[in-house]
Length: 330
Image (cartoon, rainbow, N blue to C red; front, side):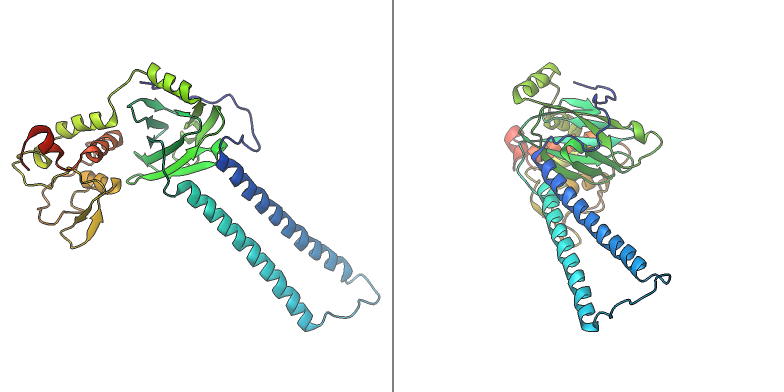
């Protein structure tokens, strides 16, 4: 498994970073239009201020001309305000569409788990391969990032892809992208996170799909998150309550992911990744209807890496998995 140290891509100062994704050009187009409209607005306003200041200076003598009729002045003001409102509302809609296109729900080819920690980025690929401060991905495939933080708020930033997403303690955030140009690109933390913030950087390595598979093969295949999660599920004693003939009556987890669960409070909640994480660290927050709030919290005992793996294992459980694999009752 790869555990490379802090690495910088060999790139000099870039005023405008390389465009390494189709999304990057769309963001740049929005940026340049916004820059042009802002510059035009500044020129108009500064031009009017300078022009009026010169024309109506107290030092100038002579005829100043007739005043603009009040109604005409009102129409000019209203027209100018409407043009600005429509222009910037259009920019807002455009930017909102781009944001939803990047951070909304979409189909992805695979998911990489990313954890921010003072002061490094830890990534795990679907086959179990791990990296630190370096992220290898294949070109022309949609990659989904699932991000969280182990300590403070970090921000995962890939300027060449025009992607920036916060990694927040206690929750999962997601982003997806499709790199279109092979090469090495900078990876930053774009949120001040402590004294070593400036050193929390690395690189994104975009490979051809064949080279990516070759790179994975050279890392030495480790246990997949599902397999590692199963071992952790047992070692932390979760299977003693949630699977098999348990002495403590607890809800089964077979096929639970994605289902709606009734809570003791009378509410209904979807068993998504956030729910599973809260059930591990804050088990009293969402108590399933019909069960006692007896599960202890694992907060401070289990790392974010391990939580990712346990959740991956729970997600892999089909309905009745324990019965099918062992013949045990629930």
